[in-house]
Amino acid sequence: MLAAAARCRVGRGATDRDRAPDASPSPSTAPWLRLLVRYEASRVRIAPSPQRRSVLNTVVRSPGLRSLSPLRLLASSPPRLPLPPPPREARRHQSPTCTLRRADHAGRFCRRHRVRGPVAATATTTATMVQWHSYNPFAKRESHSAVSIRRYRALTLLSWALSVVSSVYYTVHEPHDGYTIRRRIWDQNYLYPSAFTMHHIVGEVYWVGLFVLQFGYIAHLFSWNADTVHHAASVGSHFIVNNLLHFAFVMLFVRSHFHWAELVLVVNFLNLSWLHVRHNTYARFIHAPTVTGPLAWTFVAILWNGALMVPHPHSLAARILGNIFIWSILAYGMVFIVIFNDYTMAFALSVLSAAIGAAQFKHQAIALQWIFAFVIMAILFILTVLVAVPTWTGRDLRWRRAAVTDQERAPLLNE
Image (cartoon, rainbow, N blue to C red; front, side, top):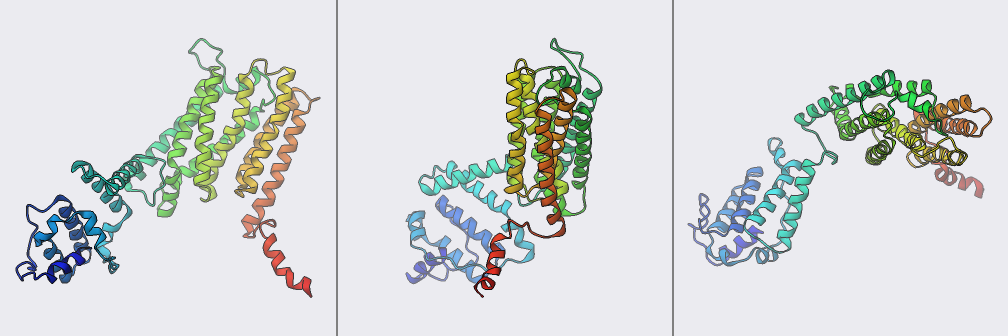
């Protein structure tokens, strides 16, 4: 762009003084031209060249360019040839962070000098997106700084400890504040029998295993492998929110605030579902304790707490609705098996279905709910084995190889 303008100036008879290599911008140069000169100066520092310096100084000293507008100069310039790759020590100037910082500076420049038009609108919008990206803890990032890694380590460890302590404390002790019915977690479970009452031993085993896996995930934040730390930090924001929401749910549930507890569960379900959609390709030691384990519990807890929330949860109408809604556990697990090939979700749902079936059989043997629960558990467990074994052995699933198999057998059929 500036090279074309320089050629126009040189063609009009620019003197040697105008093309002096040590020339500097005039104080009366237009602000937009100074911005372009500053950008060209940064490019010169990245790829130093005597010819580029000469062209730059010629453009700066040219008084005829002061009357041109930026749009006319852009329209009259030929396309820029690509620069050679910068040296190793200068590559940091072309990092994504530096690019976003330049876009932010451009937006501030347009607002300060009241530059209008499509260029200014684009720069302002880009600057706003850059600011939102820098402050958004859930945004995808190519890399994490050392400061953010330390923050993730501290907040993840504290939030996880808060979740574990609150769960263990209210499993053993009941609250002593407030004016509502206050019970321990599993006492609330048995105080209002419903179609989704769970067996406390199976539920405790599930949570102990989940907390152990989550501690292993936190240990990966302190790994020496940079890729492992990056993957663990990428899901850190959602995991911290999950721990805080689980703490809020426990505090509300043991105090019989079932409506507010249901709202917290729905919010956490949206948080974990978004996490699964955005980060479902990480290693299992990161994916299972932070995504599928809490998400499976949250989905079943919505049904469990929702049954306690309605009046008369042991009535005939509530039991019939429970016989219908329990099949949503199977449908939800099938979605993850077929679409995402995620056997960890199916296994977690099968364990929780077993908890429901054991409690329903103990409470009322002559009923359909415990039969449905054990059927769902068996189907999900079989699907888990059918998907997990080929994945562990490095083979693809049969339904994913159907098209390739048909193509390989086509010549044999013709013969």
